[in-house]
Length: 452
Image (cartoon, rainbow, N blue to C red; front, side, top):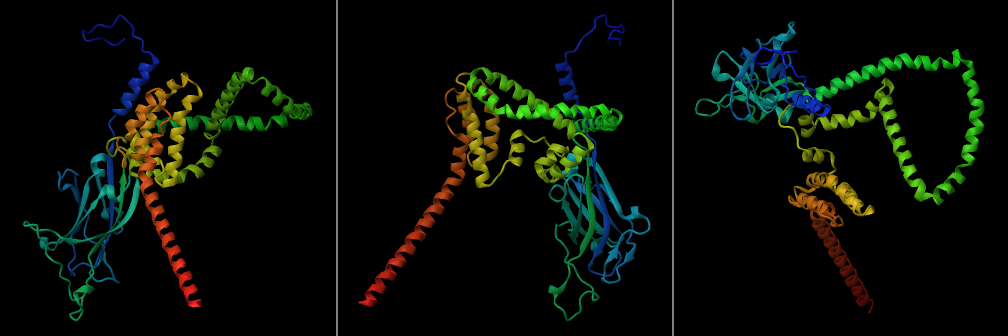
């Protein structure tokens, strides 16, 4: 027993119920510190520089979104490794030492994700320095690599003005116009790395442990089960009674169906229980199958494109990685719900249909509304907050109040968003039809007059 504050051991034992223990563990996971993010940049080359002077280095630093920290963690490469043969005033960085042109900045991932990175091409003469900036969250996603070509501009002086670029004669002949001047560019490879959120990391570790256990069990059982017919030849004899029993069962299906129809009031609860058990066993069996190597391979081909698409969205990044505040349920629903007219109509009709389903079980169905009301509010807000910000509250109230479920809140939002455009389009088509009819009538009238 651990000693208490007075130095003596506690005489009483405390037991923690499972709910409290789970809650404490969840709070510990959510409040766990996250690791730093890492911005890795590989400087490749500098093209079309204003003159033939060799730059000394390329530096990289970052500035927070709040404007603080201009020049945080400024690091630099070495001088260029070689000059491009096929481009004037262009230099390659890096050489036999692959780390010579690689720059790495470590910082808290939320800060780094919202920061602006500055690249500066430095010369012995500071007045010739060139610079370029890159906003990370507009350019990169976590654990994503981008190949970039950044335009280089002169560094602003103390007065905030920029010295215009002057090209050497090797780049522009005296007879050519300034419109032929090439913009200096910096070519690089940029990658942002960062850890999962604590709760996502916990889920990933749990799933990896589960998959490992399933693989061990399947490796030890699949071979044993497949060898049963070889080791126990009598097992094949079970097929002899199976065929006639299956034939009798198929022939008895109409009789069983008639009995079920006649005894619906009695058999309906039993049918629902059996259906629930069947669905539960099917769900458990499916989860076990998709946890095996073969199942994971199959589901990966189907789910991987959708997962990668979701991961590249702003909401997906905020859910999986610690790049800022956790997304709200409404923003999460907004990321997965459709945004086109037909898709929104289908989802709205489904939302209203589920809300009205409480009428199937009078009185008792109102208890279902207590669970559905906040979900309906989230879905309606995700669909129509841009058009009717207060509609989600109407959806919540009409689900909570008794005998108001018939109000189609979600469909009303669809009418508000798309109704005026549909009416305007219909008016335009009616006007076109009237004008076309008038032209045909005038043409027929002219034709009739010409014949007379």
